[in-house]
Length: 232
Image 1: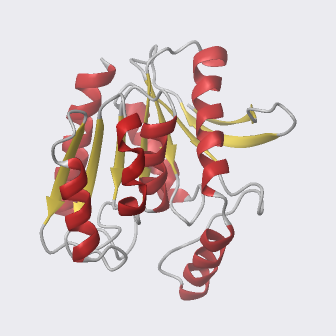
Image 2 (image 1 turned 30 degrees about the vertical axis):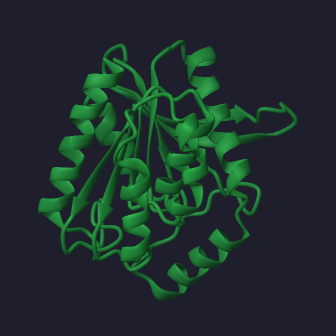
Image 3 (image 1 turned 135 degrees about the horizontal axis):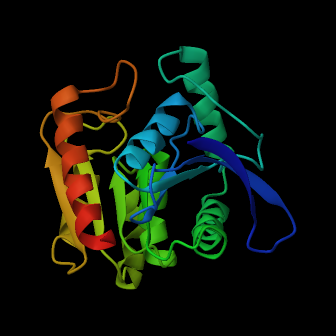
């Protein structure tokens, strides 16, 4: 079952929407699905639906709501891709993480699910790292996060397991940045990094030209095993 819910901000002075996919039975845990720069579009909703099929309560908050509510863009349509880049430039990432924190609180308080993880893609991959350092997410996964080297100073705050998927030919993450991620995180007791040789940004998208089927299935299998281990 799917629906849209309203979530209060941490300050409780406004609210934003989130797409919810519910499992057929009582959820084994909950997972916040963190959008790409394209909004809560069909691909992100499908990520939620698949997690619900696996028994999780999955919620994707609309993190761009302060710029414009209900944004849905297609990365394979060039004008929409360019609009997404423009939105990313205007987006307050620190505020976005606070909205993720509010979503986690909503799940625990309103849905009564105590174990809550998060998974993010693209911009959401970066926000996933930030969430691992700044929220009490029980387990977090980031796919092709951009600019994580700039956030390594926060690694000491990562208290729960974090997995990062890194395509080695990511057009938005150069080799120097990838090396900095490995140098900074390989010895972190809570962090696991997986490289995907020859793959580009967006390889695990549900729809469109960017998807690489074999790599997407491998990464998603690792993610599923990670959540099964850490969310119970």
